[in-house]
Length: 135
Image 1: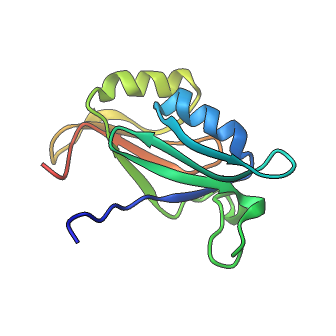
Image 2 (image 1 turned 90 degrees about the vertical axis):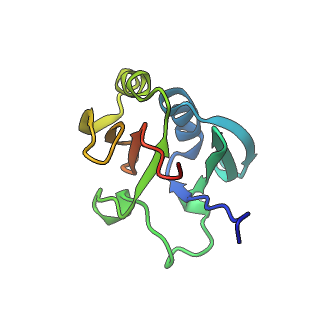
């Protein structure tokens, strides 16, 4: 299983806007965007470095009893999405500039590296860190 890859799949209520925001605020790039009806997203794949996320419009999700968005459960995230970023201080400043909700300011971590935590515009919790757990 050494070639396995984990890719989070996220549901957004305003997926087209969030795709643009994630690219601008967090540095993602669009690999694939499949538009749906009525300005929705059927499927999108955004990449950052050698990893990425997939996302779609929450309203199109075919299994609404499987997953909910933070908005649907009172604004609480149920997972942290952790991303290794080499230039984390610069990334932090760009996230703040794009109005990410900083929940833990950038700091040196006791296990190594520097990092910060924030929420995106729809309430998902993101952790960006210069600590690479795979090295």
